[in-house]
Amino acid sequence: MIIQAKVKDIRYRLAQNAGSDAIHRNPMYAYTTTLLKDEAGLVGTGLTLTLGKGNDLVQGAAQHFADKLIGKDIFEIMHSFGMIYNTLANDEHLRWLGPHKGVIHLALASVTNACFDLWAKKLGLPLWKLLSTLSPEALVSLLDFSYIEDALSPTEALDMLRKEEPLRSSRLHITNTGYTAYNTSVGWFNYSEKEISENVRRAIDAGFAAFKLKLGSQDEERDIRRAHLVRKVAGDDVKIMLDVNQQWQIEQAIRMGKALSTMNPYWIEEPTHPDDLLGHQRIAAAVSPVKLAIGEHVPNVIAFKNYLQLKCVDFVQVDALRVGGVSEFIITSLLCRKFGIPVVPHVGDMGQLHQHLVLFNHLALGHEPLFLEYIPHLRDRFKHPAHVSGGIYHTPQEPGSSCDLIYP
Image (cartoon, rainbow, N blue to C red):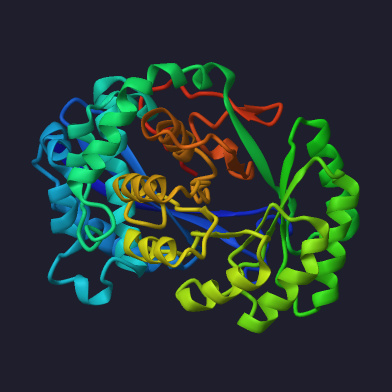
């Protein structure tokens, strides 16, 4: 039984220029952290990422949701989590502030993720193993299909999972070989070109074969020059992703997408405002075969459904700290599997939780194991930091979701 629910405000100032992008020049990473304690003393930790004072707004809503779980048994909660999630997400006092987006949905993510962590700890299993051994029926019971049944019904999801179930064991070798990582930290926005060149060389020496560069400058020539610099230093065999952090207008995105095609980007990420689906459709058609990656600021599965239906996304970057938590991540991954679009999460958790979720995606859903973003700046803040070496995430073995923090 859950006997206590606490929400903590945890903030971290990053080293100079780390974490910078076209809009966040001096970011303070922050977690609204939900702690659910049961009668045995186990604590489930759930995170959602904000920046600095954003935590002030999310905390109260997370506490409101978390308090509703006091007195409930975690196994009963998870037995029909899809129904409980639906009830929380449609709280009549809070839904006006969403629905299913913004401060309220971020708060729900923190509480949801704490439930999944406590459940895995209670069973003594790493979250990836727990999720990957659930029956198709148990997985579907975790999910809320509201507003997406025109694209994916519970029956269809169950059929998909049943077809994949016999193949799970044949995919287990990835838990021994590890999951490929890509390095985001070589090319933060405020880094000089000299720093970027040095970072790329060091990352290659460390075994990475894929990098991300932050773009979105008011000086378009700066963006083009930096992108070609990374390609020149890294060589033709390395995957280079370009992240604009929503800074381009539509015509600018089309113009820049065509200009940057000559350095062969693996994708262009968040070219414009995440709510402008028709804008993305125009961009995707105009810059093809350059591919678009979307998801860091997409708040829910309904929006992802629309992106998929409009065929204007090539990589979905759903983040379990941005949507309503692990359950909405899973249903988004199922939807992407149906549409044949790969899932490469954005890692607001610094890869701690998502190292479990990408393994689940491959083992239980049959997603291709492409790679997972790696940002090391907060690794020393976690009790069980993600183990990445040689450009590979090594499979976590501790019970839970790897989200327990060392508190300041």
